[in-house]
Length: 437
Ligand SMILES: Cc1ncc(COP(=O)(O)O)c(C=O)c1O
Image 1 (cartoon, rainbow, N blue to C red):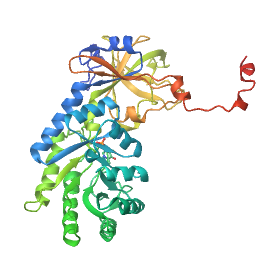
Image 2 (image 1 turned 180 degrees about the vertical axis):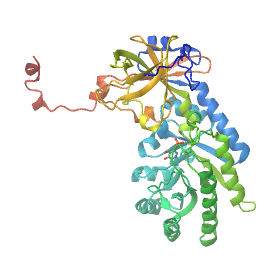
Image 3 (image 1 turned 60 degrees about the horizontal axis):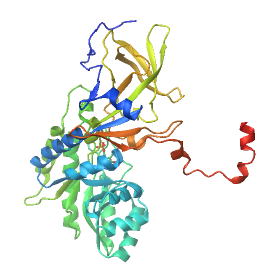
Image 4 (image 1 turned 135 degrees about the horizontal axis):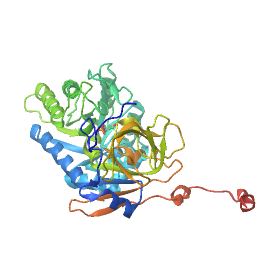
């Protein structure tokens, strides 16, 4: 076995193998106070990411508005921070719509996407002035029916198109090239109470090709003008979705890094080439991962140590694929305690009692003791919405404030959270105690 020879805390890729603090708070202190595993969010990074993205966007096209993609992370505290920064809400289900409203977001500042929107939530959203993006013909029928009672209403449609990029999502919205989108617009034009006021397209997620966005914007603008000439529509906005990778992920297959500015420059180029004189539609963007990913950390602790026959160490830790959605990306795994010594390629197992629960095959780490915390990042996107309660309850979440405050923003679950909705019929209670005894 080829062991690396480093004795310091940097692996051959220049990544620190130790991260003993998050925003100047010691990882061991966080574990002592809130237990392990634990999700930690940095308010400073959340706000800094938002401001950086928003300023590069608005300096390229002033009439831009960010809508925070709830499904990426709908912890109330995270959403509230983005709303304080000025974000609209982008939601994709009745539950998310309700959540945004409960947080106090007015309907007029909500973008409602998604392939399944319940009819009652559509009725609420239409009445409350949300921007609704129809995904399919049956939803158009629902909207037509709702508008019959509600009166004249403006809606948008979601488009899918060939952006000459790796992502060729066709399952959402109406296809542009096949004429399906035009047919949807014709249908809306034929309905008395509905108008088409916006076009939406989300190219895909974690797109590494900024050029996809100039292509999408150009195609959307061509379609906008085609519709405005043909029908009595005024398309007031374009929504080009999210899909921008987070900074840490920001490497294309050739190892060249893209930045947010590269994506925004492509969007601006698409607008410049496609906008007609004097036309200035509002531009919505729905970033998710790019705003939140680097602000989130998962702390997990070593609960058991193993060694393979070849001498390679392996560790069992207390968080695994139950709370970390591994399919999305590679994470950095760092020791949460100052430690030095030879770095060894180590395997990290989660607690799930399933063979697939492996967090890392060969991560370079110093020798870890039982109880040693590990810090996994970037972990802010999708994990705290897609996490599950498989054999264990979900961990607590804390927020480190800008002034160093440490606030719990979600309590650790326990068995009562899992049992709360369960019903045990009386007839099945009989003899339960005895059989256990
Ligand atoms: C419609 C829509 N908007 C925004 C997003 C956010 O995407 P991302 O987190 O890749 O920015 C998604 C995610 O798939 C989406 O489906």
